[in-house]
Image (tube, rainbow, N blue to C red; front, side, top):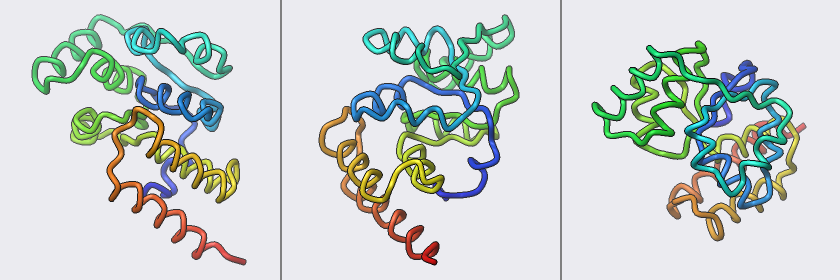
Length: 177
């Protein structure tokens, strides 16, 4: 599923703080350039204060203000689902801008986004997409996944780490010439 075709067809994505932070920790923030248009909110960037300059150097990033109705929706998400401000504004931005793809590493936010009809993915999906698009080699993607597992602040279980390596192997096996 992470290597599915849906993400290949999408030109725009909304990013939450987690993927920005975790990609920066493993020196792979450039992988966000897989999307011609990346949107985020000022609330999300405030969660990334120490890397904000790096994020804002990404040529395709747009900081979109939420309209009044979207702010109300974000507040509803906080109250109803106990989401944090960043995640709730990210989902509200997806709705406001009609963008189905939402990158977040927060499991609760992913579940809420999915329930609302969006397609949530995390940092691992972005790495796998980069491998599928041949931006990263197999060695590079495996190294990046290992760094996420061992040195980043991303909570990654051993099972999910191993599953990701299996996905890489499965994709590699299915696409041998």
